[in-house]
Image 1: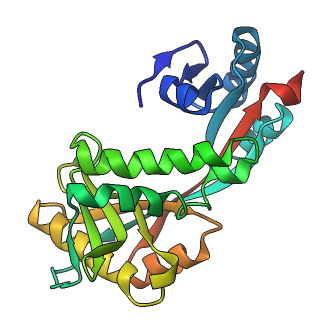
Image 2: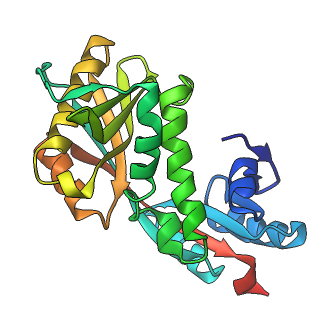
Length: 243
């Protein structure tokens, strides 16, 4: 998503247009930057600021609370060494005709995200954000390098998006399984298919991000061999709270 630089934060044009409000993100979170960002945002009419802080950075966490930022999410980054490839017959490459079904699935599959947790973003627009994310993942190679789907009788019931971030490192962006098909092993099968693809591309380590509140996802990644790299905290500041 494109960004323009401001003094203490970045304006986020894509987010602003999507949600219909002016949104920015604090750059290099620290006590002095947070204070400057809030003052500058108020002058510029920014409606919402995002802030991502390390969970062990107590000074920044206190500064965010003092500036009326509200915690909305715990961001957990996992990584794993890529195991050997395995044959997953129910998993195939996404096709163009899958996009409408995948978009509908995305609109109901990521309710643990910070946008829903915040409570001030339109649920309709939150749904549309993830629909746009999976659609772009399928159609724009600068957004994702490959998308795999779990197939049942010719219909996609789950997906995983894969991207190569740098030499030797891959990233899983989105993964979801339709609620009516959960607990049937599709999540694990999608991960294993992604592992196989990453290995074929020369990536020997994979990262994935999930929410601290998403216990099912945390357990799935641990079963698949992922281990926690970092724990961070998402905050949102709203101008309405400071007026």
